[in-house]
Image (cartoon, rainbow, N blue to C red; front, side, top):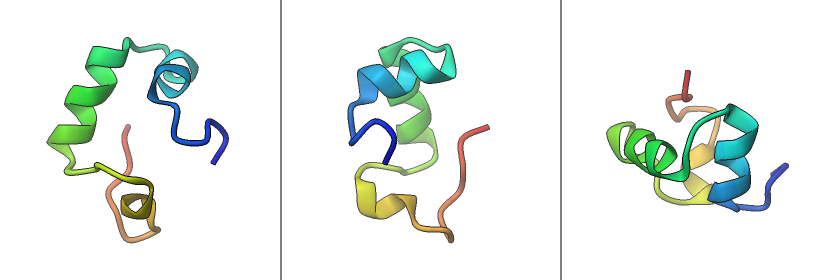
Amino acid sequence: DQVNGDKVVAGKMLGISRATLYRKLKRYNIGSRTDMSPASPRLQ
C-alpha cells in the first residue's frame, strides 16, 4: 500500500533494481496486490 503498486518505487525502497524485484515476485509467485494477503509468502 505504501507504493500503490508501483514496482519501481517498491524496488527503490527495498534497495534493489526493478528487474531484481520482478525476479523475486516471480520466484514467490506474487503477481498482483491481492497476492499480498497475510497468508502469502513475504519477500526477505
